[in-house]
Length: 492
Image (cartoon, rainbow, N blue to C red; front, side, top):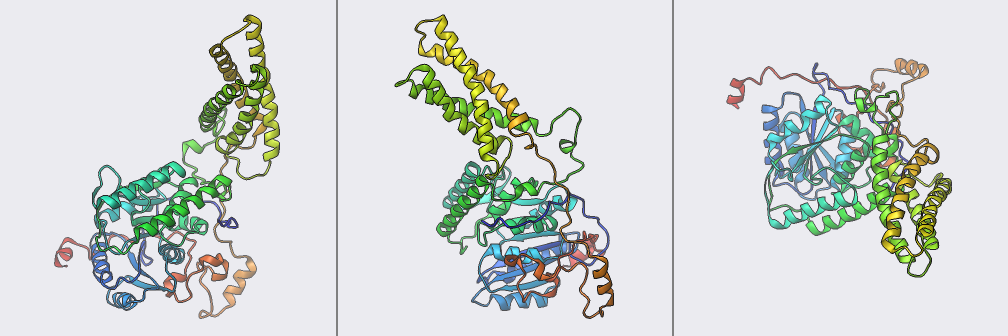
């Protein structure tokens, strides 16, 4: 997985101001591959729905993934016949590649996509993008697994979908309910930061983006949808499931080793009381306590199992020391990663050395407890030994947490990084050069040269001009069009 990306911090959420006109507020991408039969009815139905119900300017982008049939001609005809419809041709297959290419180059503040079969009821489109426009959420997904969703599909696809989402919850600790529903939206400013970290170019693109967004602290809004399975779908279920499982392994490994720079994506909310600095209230204390208790409970169980095993061939003192040593190394490694959020291998040896000092203190407490028990009873039974060790370990656990927090990991508390602009401000010399150029050769200030983009994420060279713009300014929304009256809607 790539680790050389430096995307900068996530932007603070803000309501997009509703004023002005011109630039579309919403850009809906329809990725297609050999869909000459369904493309025309899909785009016309989507365009009619948006023109009738969506209160702001919009754009529909057909992203052709190297189709070999008449799909490019159909897409070009739709772009010529319907206003606010564009066609983009990519010479390589991959839904993820198409979405990343178009989203990276779009100038709309809200980006969405949907499958060409329109299995999802379009009435969910406005509830999908509304939280992004208001600034409440960063991403939004349609969920077929929500309780209020109404879904019609076969038992095979139902089983595969639910199994896949259970795998995500168990392996990647995902909290969203439906990763593969072809009905999603994201704010453009968030996409500019997240997309350079997403490696997959196929069907796993959605899952990888959602997992990284969730780990980076983004808020994901879920919309229950009405969904009807397309019996003529060309998706190869077995091959797609296999590629998805490979992606789960790759992302899980990257998260476990800390090779993803998610710690640099902290969001500067500014208005969230949970992120305010309060005198006398250490940040992250509650989360660290919960993580430490979970790790401590598992470590205690691991320690008791080891002690019981070692006790069969060794004395109580030797079995206690050996079990405590092994469990202490595992405990320090788990607390380092899970409780205090320290990623990577830097400082791991020092942390383990300090953890062994803490282990020595715990060993003194537990060994002293066993010595006191032996002095009180010549031949104590095994259950009594375990009870004494549990009590001694509870006391050692409290002391271990205080030492971990104050001595071993003193700088591990999460802090919000300073917000950095995604694009550098032009210097005085660059401004003078820009003013001296002719209008024909002058590049707009909002345009980011392709040489500044990561090599794997540059737009396709043949994209139309509206898709070569990376505007750093927040685009203002267009109010409801005066033509959208009840009379004109009936006339349609």
